[in-house]
Image 1: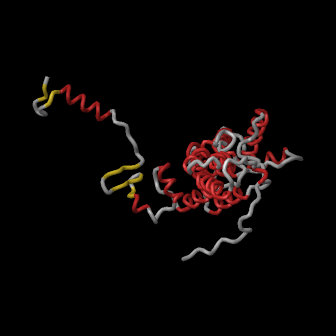
Image 2: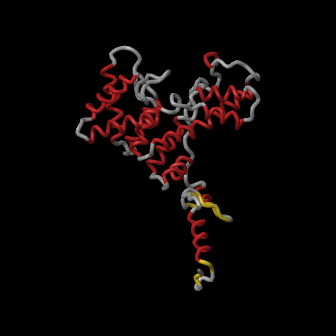
Image 3: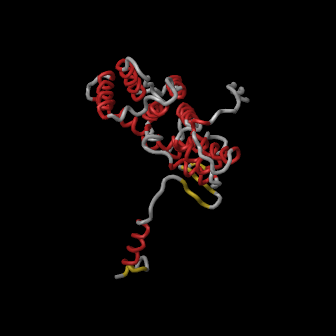
Length: 282
């Protein structure tokens, strides 16, 4: 059977159409000769006009963020950039560097060092906050929802993701993110929920180590209010930590002897003492 108007067998045209339909699709980046479009925007026009945080938001979320969201994206990426020599991801990178491995292998080892208990709390905390907000939508107050969340988490013996820290009794990164969210008027229900949980924990815990909101919890709440999905929020942690991992691996290669046994408790800091940021150039 032949479609005379097309001059090709119908079966052949159907096969061609099926082949075209079977091609997989992407909505991220289009590459043509002399043209690169990221979510429809020319990459060369983005350069110098969007910050790195704004470009990451565009790539994940599909649109250029507002100035307020862009500022928070930058702040979140900076908040995780490095946390000293003790995190498991840093130790993985340094242990790889001490073998003489190339930087790419050291960074890969560091990223592979992320897991449920190191880098996974953002996604877990967002799940807890969403559960609390579901209770609020069903008629509970924020404090009532917080009481139920805390009780549920304490009974599970796994703790409450997004709270407490090995070093900080007040995580300065979390405080700054909440301050920025308030000043930029993007604070919403997720921040309100995590504040209620923090108050409930403070009331229940009379003695012992305090459990303030840490940076994972702050980012979980802020991302929730910005409409950023948990998987993307977790990706932000990975992206932001890569520069720190690379810097730690480079320092290990340049300042330390090969094949040493690394004990994170033995290190001392010999960098600059606290100093003020320079004024921005206009």
